[in-house]
Length: 606
Image 1 (cartoon, rainbow, N blue to C red):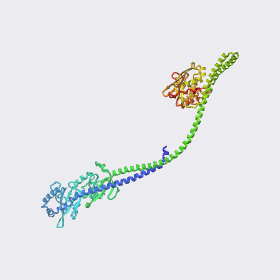
Image 2: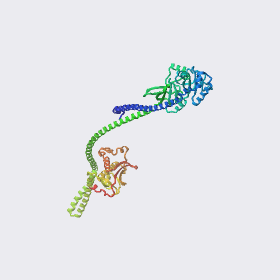
Image 3: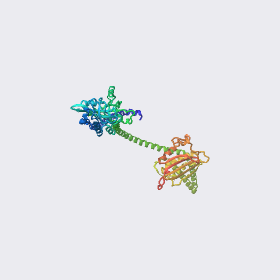
Image 4: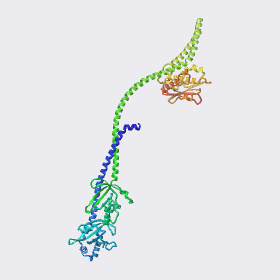
């Protein structure tokens, strides 16, 4: 089937299957992706709660620490009355800072100047610094706890600032501040499975599991906002670049699909880029937001794989359904075709039997006609063979009458005996000719090959003597027995010997050699002459009907074709070739009869 015909026949069906498979694949992708993202969201929610708990625990550990400083009488006296107690308070704050594990603890007066600090004896001490610009100072001066994550202007060290107002007689007389490091928490986050970030109220990343993400922004900052943050010194003049996080599609409550672009010149940024499911949660009253970024690339890959499998499965199901329908139609058409074929077969069997009978009858007629043609060819020689005995009969019978009249009974009896012998000879000749000319049944039986060869030579004896042919026969009588029909074997041998006589006509010393022997389960008969042999163009058409090299009045070219058909009928072979020593040789191969069977000897003389 050509491609064009295939497309015409199955084009619409294939396009329908492709469309259905594509639709199933898209639907499967959507369903699989939504299920995968839902599972990812559940896992992200658990992680979000876990990270929020750890962050709140870290912050709450120091939440009430600044307020406890207001319980110390020395701290209140120093802030309220001046410096006589500065050394005592500084040492107290230093010891307290060491035991609490904070970065620094310090006290501010009403003007925002540091009057005591835990790092009082270090070169980078806070004492004397004006921190009135810090937001936590203003919040505490208004009587509220202050909270701020920023970068110190002295040492440039980031930390979380907690402040509390110092009260005396119900009046705010100063501020106590504690700076806490969250690096330990960040270090624990560095080993988590998914990225996590904490942003402050300005949208600046202040904590992150990836160090390169710190002090970046979730979105590009407007110029006005950037200048305000620079004036506040909260981030100590950090450039605050954008993280490169792009929101693509919301997914449920407090979740969205985002895309994170790779950061330039950051080692390992390709691992922290791609598609993520972002889930955010506020951090109490701090104004912070905790965000977990769950990688969604694997979910999409799995969804595409499942979509491909769904498409293939739907295509296979469609193909199976189509094949089943085609099979049903094929079986129905096959049943109809089988019924029609059976009817045609029955009709053909009837015609074949009829034609076989006709052809068999025609073949038998053709074989018999070939025998009659052979009889016609040898009739001239037989007429000469019969004329001489007839003349002798006339002479001997006339002499016998004369001798009887004279009373010479003995001589008359001698003539009559000779007449009887001549009549017997004529009877043998006519019986042999009659046996050869009669129709044969064609049934197989054991045949003495020597007897068949002798009968054939007897029929052609006149031609052999007239051509002065030297005949050599090498066949053991009653030892070489073939399984065939005696009459038809004689016909084959007559045809082969007659062809050999035609071939050696005009040869100086014509010779004919007939050799027969048994070879295993086969009997082989060779007819060889010493003529010019078979030309190459003759060998190619040797057994074709009506092919002959003789003159038109000497045959129709059916002798070898009929002989080949006779030999094939009995399961044998007939071949013709040139002998290495010259001349042509025809070989007849027939099945050998069982040794225990009696040779067919009566057919040739019937």
